[in-house]
Length: 263
Image (cartoon, rainbow, N blue to C red; front, top):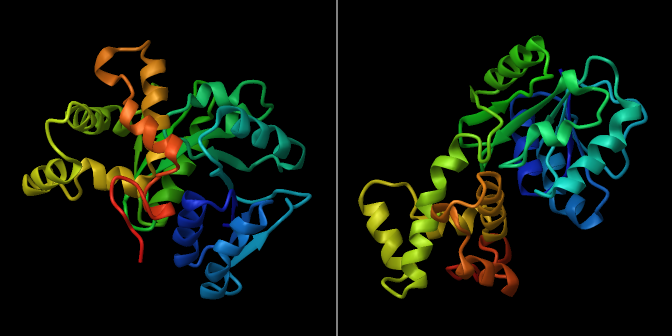
């Protein structure tokens, strides 16, 4: 087995490390030099197992290709169209999307039967759950092979419907949205909300978790779920979160979110 990952951002890096840690050969592709430099230490940590590339191989004969570019529908569609001419007939193509329609991403592709959603959670090396989202075109053997591959690297795959937010992000929206509503009204601070939820047994309060995930990513998922469910009030996105995104305060990855992470 060998794996090709498209995108060397937070999720691409984590997924690459997951497979490399299980001694499965991984190739990580990203045309952005800064992104490649940020993951260079991984290739040093896993020599002869993990390779980083600036260009795509002319023949993609890997067991699975995992797309992990930013959560942008048009960008993902562009990536899937761009690899079409190079795919060998048996390659599984998986999209790591948090909330985008897997059916929508597969439109117009000649390899619909091999196209499937694999939604990893951050960080992929630690969180066991992976949502597996087939479309109506996905071959049954591709679903079974996906489950087997994920289990082989210690994951707990769960088949999810191709609905807005799938399972986890749909269930999780109120955890974030209601917390944001409280802070928007000035009732409490993010610190108090987090202390209360962690005191009740949650591993992380909603604001610490948004900072970890990325406030921009979390906000985009909320927008996708809200739009996909035809704008229910209880899932309405937060102006406070939108303000954080506009200010560039995206969480831990930039050193500032609802909390400060300066050294």
